[in-house]
Length: 400
Image (cartoon, rainbow, N blue to C red; front, side, top):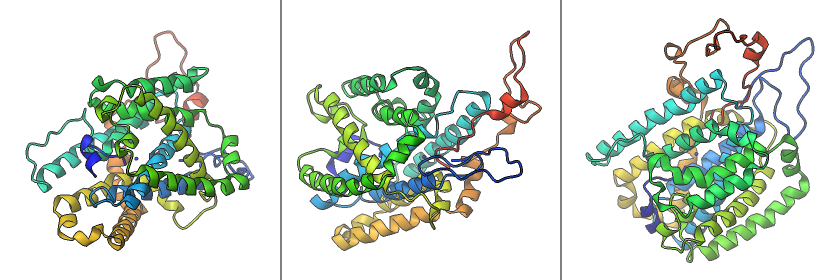
């Protein structure tokens, strides 16, 4: 699409711990509540798998010649698929308090994959797309690596948002300011970091009972006309609106609009995304499905599917086989993208990539006697109790 030239990266973009078991098994969680500690929550795994499929399918449409219907579907998906991912990320980050072992997990689970795949995608661009001058920069995320950089920043600032009594007005104000500040620059894609921040903080503010509300039957029924109305509106907007608004990469001025349009779009898109995210989550199965296990490997699907999509574009497959832009061709491309990202989320692939996505890096961190990352307390201060050390962050990783 023509608008995609306005940015050099596209989004793309989410789970467990264990309660002590005495003689009895722990009680099953009520519907809408997180799983017991030590068990993965099928709801979040199901949601993450379905979202990663939408991410891959939407990315596969980037290189196709877009009709009005395709652009409408593109707008519809981009309205909620990354916001939903980010809300889940925030919800699963609620216990992050910047403890030493949590910082270690942040470095090994997010920062290390970001560095590895930022370099990998840049080299892939250089040699497969014959672009030897393409820069390798850890400060300017390329393609889908922006989400890892953003998640690192969001999670690191979690204690700040948890400290505020009313964080949502603050982060919405920051997002609005970001939308009118073209000088923010490309460093770590801060435009996206600021404009998507409200969804992460919203996830931090959610409680299990909010998920119970979303799962009510009446909410699922209301979601159907909401989806239909959103699709009709997207079809109307397809010829009147730039899709770049949904990427949150640019300020209003960079999109040739008046400055005041930035805050207007921030609030309008936040409301639309919130409604569609709730509607989507209301239809996510809570029980174990055939694809539930794949939700544990969404980081692999997220990081790998870009090589397939970019590779097909770099070698000219979409230019050679122009029928792929026809309706049936788009269906075929969508199915192939869905199958490919599904295979990338399977346990064998996750095991292969574990050294990158879940590195131990014991050589880089000091360890205390319990095996946890240690920060020596100041002289004269009492050490932490063993129960405090072990308590830690029992929430599952957002992406794994």
